[in-house]
Length: 222
Image (cartoon, rainbow, N blue to C red):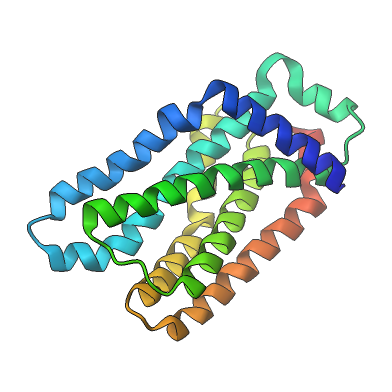
């Protein structure tokens, strides 16, 4: 399973490096979100400081939606989805590979967004022992849930419009928990963010286990 996951993740990441969709489209979109809010809230620095964690994760969730749509759309070109079914690869490995590729892209974007909130909002990043695990757990949750719902909508003609309707409500716990954990870290009270980190860990583990279990069925029905 893990060998198959490595193959699929490598394939998706090579496609991304060659197409540069994340670098040329998703990353500028994420930075544009931060810039627009910086202009809108700049007169009131108190409000801007308070909402920085939320803006960071709103931008991340929207980027995750674009990354998932991209990861699923490449499988529908030239019968790639049929080739995956006939390849003999473990469905669980395919799921883990695609989720890992999306997670890697999101982590790169999160680093870029972190630099953006420091430069544009003057945020002081503290509590690294909470920030890093929170980012990792939230990213795994976003990638796992995104790939699961992406394959669920893959067989429908309206998948481009249906996917956001399915995925965004499911990602609400990640958005809330990650925002609260980041806010606790920024304020120097990392202990208050541990329960939110626990929620993110449960969410990530649950969707990863669910994807491993049902991805084969979704792949056959897509």
